[in-house]
Structures are given as C-alpha cells and as structure tokens.
Length: 200
Image (cartoon, rainbow, N blue to C red; front, side):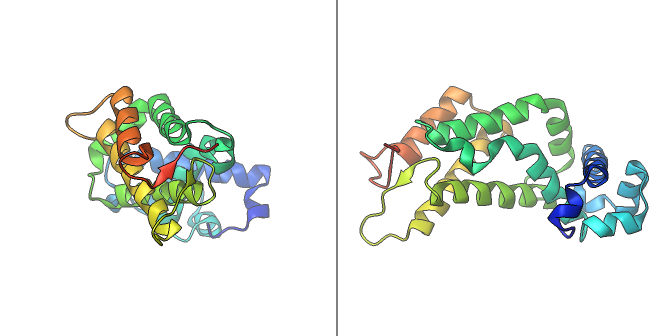
C-alpha cells in the first residue's frame, strides 16, 4: 500500500482502510472492477478523494488490501508444524470463501475469470502460496536433479490456484474431498512426482 505501516495501524487509519475496503467490495459485487471509479469508492465510504490517495495509489492497490484483509487468517506462520500444510491452506481458503459466500458469489458474477479482479486475486494468492512453499511452512520441498526450488514453489502455487478455481468458480465444481485428492495426486504424491515431501 501507499500509506506507511504506522499510519495505517492507527485506529483512524484502520477505520479508513476498512471503510474503503467495504465500499470497493460492495461496488464490485454490482459491477466489474474495471467499471469502478475512485469517486464512487469515496462516495460509498464517505471520505474525500484526498484521503483515498493518502492510503492507496489506485483502486488496484485497494483491491490488494482487500485480499490481504480477507486472508489475515492465512499468514504463513500459521502453517508451522502443520502435518498437512497444503490441505490446511486449501481448507482455510475454503472456509474464508464459505464465510463470505454470498458476497463472493456476487463479486464473481460481475467479474469474469479473465478480468482485472481475478488477475489481482490470482497474483495475490499465488504470491502467498509461493511464500509458504519457499519458507517450508506448508511442506519441505525436496529439490532433485538441479531443479530450482523457486520453480517448484511456483508449480505448487499455480497448481493450488487451479484447484481452488475448480472448487469454487467452475461450472462443474468439485467437493473439498475431491480437492484434497487432487492436492495429494498433483502436489504431494512423492511416488509419482518425487518433488514434494511431507514436513517431518
């Protein structure tokens, strides 16, 4: 975000951040992110444009803050010691989606899979999964045959994102049990991939 951490951490700062976030999420549940204007965000939040630009560079900066706010329960350190880290990560995202199911459904009804909002969510989610993989909070990744660990982390992140999209956003969604099975088969199964192993 444009605003410095200390300023955003004050009570007034949090109130502004939450107000702007709520306003944007309400707007993208009615129209696409591309159609939303900063003026409309400010009107919904009841703050002047100057206040918006004190905290955010643009609406895309604000939507990234919305994802971070939603995903506060998905911090990488939360997976320290988890025996099934990728399952834990998926389940936390699933629980997050379920808690805000009506809002999420409305948002994605007005924002296609190829739109700016989905690109933003994809970028944010992939970065978080990649960080979890690289810091070994989900699984200790065993790199063989000279494969760069970052490449393996990117593979895990992109695969997790595909499974999430199939679970919640496809026209033929799959169940959590099926999602777990895909995670096991595509990421965890060392007998077929030899690339990722459970954290000891």
